[in-house]
Figure 1 (cartoon, rainbow, N blue to C red):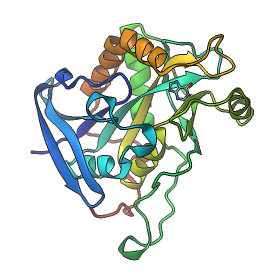
Figure 2: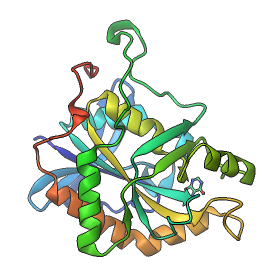
Figure 3: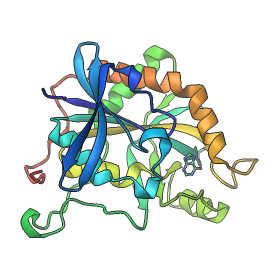
Length: 262
Ligand code: HPA
């Protein structure tokens, strides 16, 4: 059985019951195991993957991103929609808003970033002009319109190493380099998706203004609380996009045939 579409649930989005007949499966990959839920949504096979594992047990810097994305590829996935909780540095992107992210800046430090480690896979430099699939981003905007949710049509996501939040000085630096949003999980997930020639898009949900901009100190609980208040909206938005996703892949994500063989 083939699964063309995957939904990666980030912080606050764990509920496999969004799929009918969901069953838990462990997929073996050259990079380790990934646990996924396989099920159906409106008659199509969909994979749901909880990025942080059961009960949010894996912190951002220890997620096995290579195993997760390799497992999706192995299951036949072509299109991936991922959620991400983010802090905002942009006054127009407010808590509760969604953003169809269109660029990223990588400030991570310790994570395996690539499938191309030399050897059999060779040395490959993957194009990152359009890191996020423009076709899925457009559907996110349309779904936001029909569900009456605020979905910003673009934004630069800056990925920090975590698991701590940023200092106000780091937030000022990120503003200077053009970041709109800050999170801890977007990279290397998007990079690996691009290396695998997958259509991949992130819908970011703003849970707070970033440290130093927010009038209060940040807490993980605050992020979880805002995600919980909006879990219904983010799931409705994601499932509407998944429902509309066709197999046409009229976008530049198909790559040039350099994707690694898994
Ligand atoms: N910083 C980093 N990651 C986050 C934040 C933040 O302010 N909010 C939610 N995820």
